[in-house]
Image 1: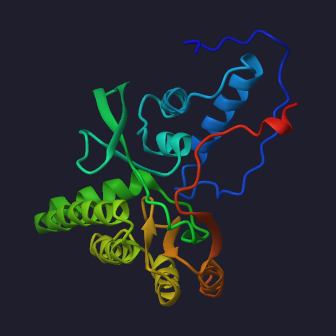
Image 2 (image 1 turned 90 degrees about the horizontal axis):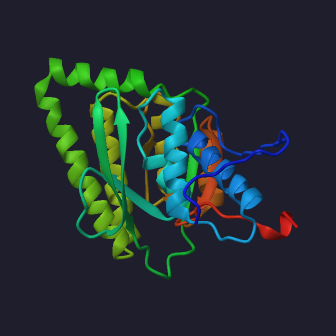
Length: 267
């Protein structure tokens, strides 16, 4: 693999098609960065296979440039690698370490470990159904709101600790193929996020409407708008429930692939 992409040809006419909701906390810009990276790779090096780790790092660099030096690798790594990705400051027990990455930010150098949970076979009939509230997800504002809440009510930090413990329990359940336990963890996590005041009536309504047909449901992203997600084996019923409760559904198979190229379309 070449270390640097260099293109000196004629200007490109690029057309983008997306089913993702814009500014909804779904990582659409990260997915687009990976798609652009893959497209440019196939244009410049058409005979070489994609290196998903390199795509993740390139996309993270692009996101950091667009965000003035601040960007988490979570969305870019997930859309590049696919499956279940866990990003942490350290290697996470019970996960498979994939690669490390770092970034020079205005606040100094940050480092991350990119880990993956290997999803067992036999759960391919499971789906994630996203419900979009129709309201943008203001990540910066919500982070500031939670920080202010904790400064005024220090006991709320216990909710953050509980979310970390619930997340670890959910990862253990997923790695064991126990989707029922994973759903319970999702429900518990949503209750903690409600106590941190990041949910909204729209998100709560979609979560409650989804639960009779789901293993678990919770808000996703920053909260304050954006989306919720339900884990289910009946995506049709969940999608209907989300629509009836005022949301817009979008579904994805659990453990979907990451960045890839459909070669038959570029012949």
